[in-house]
Length: 239
Image 1: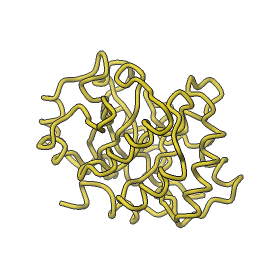
Image 2: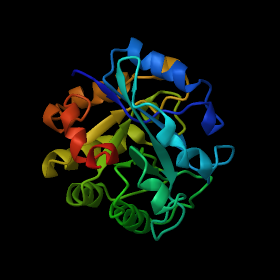
Image 3: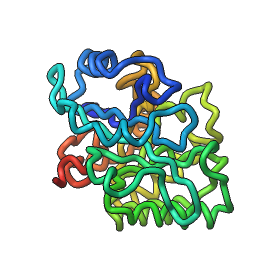
Image 4: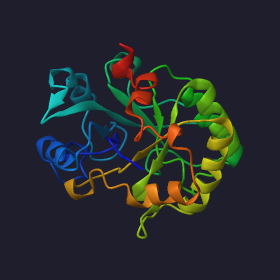
């Protein structure tokens, strides 16, 4: 598959990543990407930047080194009511917003509780992507997830980092196979992301793309192959 997009990456501002904005954008340009997202961890994640960082992202250029650069956030889902850790007035200014379950910020419930939480998050008008919904530590009903994402206009992420052999996320491959079959059934689009915390990993989607090709997942449902699909999802394109 062709691959022009990487929307989920982190810089030193996230506290546990290792490169600057310029270094990450240069890596994306070297990989011949067209659209590149920098999505720092939101404030509930230990060690990351404050809400002021996100409030000031409007000062950054959206065209850099020949790329469209989108600046946004990887939000933390913080409770079963689907609340996240930035206010709506800040989220309205983000180019792209990912919402994820992270163990430092969210205590996993039952499959039913986690699924209801994701569905509540999807209803948020400024959330565009559900990040790495693959971790067996946060069990979820993938049929309901794929149906909900289709209904509420949210992308489901296939996270390359989760599929790496040294990933700490549990049963990611098995869970993605289930999720992707339901996405095929309901024609729910997905986005493949690197979740890069270092410049060498920018645009590296090898494990994820290999899985999509292995199961013959339809290219028409993959944002990375069809960047114009993103215009239906990202806040940047809705303004």
